[in-house]
Structures are given as C-alpha cells and as structure tokens.
Length: 224
Image (cartoon, rainbow, N blue to C red; front, side, top):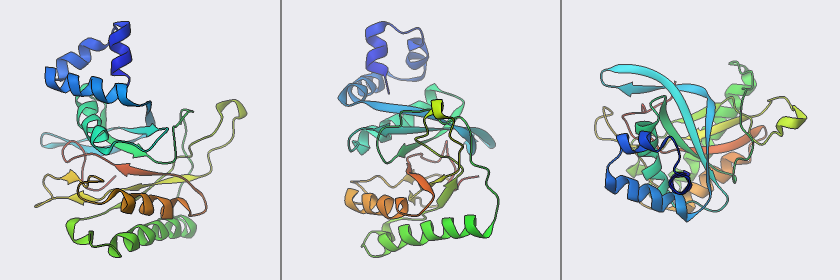
C-alpha cells in the first residue's frame, strides 16, 4: 500500500515486488498507492489457505483507509499482496476508519453461549440486509466469521483486549473449487455493503467489521 513512497525512497524491498509482479501490475500498484492514504495491518491470526493441493496456515492482512475506499483498488491489492508476501494468504478491508495502532494480541474466546449468540446475531443482521435486497441470489455463500481481535487500543495505555470483530465473506463460485469475492459496486451495490457493515458494527462488543477480498485460491471459501 506504500509502493509509491517506496519508489521515491528506492526502498530495499522493491526487488521483492518486481520479482512477483509484471510491469503492468506495478503501474497499477503505483496508481493505487498514490491515490489515498491506506494502512496495511498484519493481524495476529493465521487462517487456512490453498497452495497447490495443500492446505496452508498463513497470516491475514487488513487494509484500512481514512475515506471511503475504491473497491477496485482494494481488489488489486488483495491479488498482489499474497504474491509478494508469501506468509499472507488472505486480505480484508477493515471498516471504521484508518487503523492507527497495531493489533498484537487477541481476546480469549471460547464457545460460550455469549460468543455464539454474538456471531449468530451478526450472521442474522448481515443476511437480513442482503435478503431484503435483490442481490442475495447473486451470492453463492456468505460466511460470517468472528475474530478475537480488538482494534483501536492505545498501546501506551496497555488496555486489555476484550472486544471481537466480524468478517463478512460474500463469495461467488460455480463449483466451490475456485471463486471470487463479491466486489462492492460490481456484484453488490456499495450502499448494501455499507449497510451490512453498519448493522453488524452496532452489536455490543464488536470492535470492527471487515470485508474479505480474497479469491480462492489463495484463500478458502470459509475461514478456519
């Protein structure tokens, strides 16, 4: 997300980008990274991905922005980041504004009645918004995932991690062997996506709502 600045400073890691991308992709990357300020955050969790015929466990990257994002730009980043960073297999957009503080620990989470009720409520609210629109039939599946992540904690205050976050994963596929994320503004109107995220964000104890932008491969349809 800082490729344009890396070029200006002749960053030492530019060769990794060049080795994993074409010239056309690097031009796209420069255009995307110079448009608006984006922040990339490596989340302290690993999810299952697909590499060849094998399952892999790699990190999730979250991208956040000060303003409403350009979703096509985010899709470009979601394709290129796992190719450049081999320890990443999933890229999400983090709603709610720019993430300024790193997330370095997780909220202890067990299958309690409260935790299950939270994810069920999130699933119900998101699905209800989609059901009330005419776009539900365009989606093959929409997993809703609870993450043990509490954003926006000032590291200097050492506040404990006590909230959780939700990921929405509207997915389009013909056979579930491969597939693509439902792109806001293409497959689902942006206002429907924003409404889903807003409804889920209103649940008590939810820190942020994320939107999974990962194709399969490298990500799987659901999360583990």
